Image (cartoon, rainbow, N blue to C red):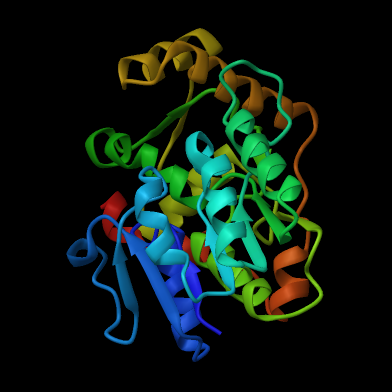
Length: 277
């Protein structure tokens, strides 16, 4: 059974390819840039993307299951073409923000993808991870240049997840039965505050990394200065504030589905220490 991985050059999609190959599953990868993806030799490559539906019929022909990257703009056309190609299973990357009402939330796009895939009648599974550990790379410049982390809400407790754990879950549900019609909320193995994350980075680097608390207004100004739209900055800030009032707790889904512990934040930092040095 060949699995089509869309967005195979993306942060998660590229890891899904590796997970499937490691399981001995035949993989077809849809990517706009095969050279940059540096895909394994065993992977069949189709040049294209979800953004160009004209490239999809060739990618979908002869496959049964699809890992679907979240691209709301053309998801309806993808579903039409996938139905025509006889696709049975679709595992879609979504997000914990699906259903958010804030105008700038990423959840609107995730909800659109979920709605279209479900309505099309596939054997679907939706993966809804929360914050990515990768997001902490946004502090890397400040740590390198000032030796500090700057953020509002040091007590905001999230459950960040490693992208590799998301990919491992995606590969698992793509090849195993019993996951149809399921929505999996994915998290890392621990609830950890922003201040604690900064402390962990310091421990790994072997030096203190002070946490400089910003006011909400200062945080928005810094994000806008870094290129974030003001609405997105406002939405992100609301998320931080919400996890001060209601600290996030691990869902345990990664552990349940993979039969192992998820990657901890400390383990992730050790694997990415060069970015903070």
